[in-house]
Length: 196
Image (cartoon, rainbow, N blue to C red; front, top):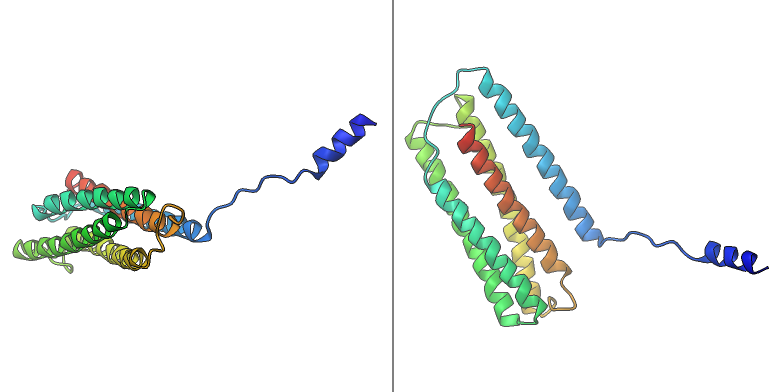
């Protein structure tokens, strides 16, 4: 009889389900799709480069500096997360604001990089080497603009005190996306330097 009761208890015990915040799940699907897009483009770059007729040019120096700016923005984003965990609302707002400003500085530096490319007679239309450079940097800039929009919503939520130690989802989503964009840029930058 006791075996029957034990079996019944095992049967009635609900199984643990894996759960994830739906917004975080959507973010990870989006990140995976971006990874697939850039993986396909870097593969196409390598194949096209191997065919020859490849324009040689100098990668703008400003791209190196913009990489440092973006790494700094990841540090300030992490500062925002730590501040939120401690309910340091002033630090949270300042950190998100600085992250946003560094993101804007990065975009400006990317634009200056394009200006430098034009001075070297590297254009979007013409040799595929230039086309790839503009597509890589332009697509990343587009995604970074979407990251800036996410930061604006997080900043608004911070001012409304919706982000705090017991409510970190929105900030975690913003931080995950921002750190991903930083890592993606570093990958693209080193890829372009190494396979230039």
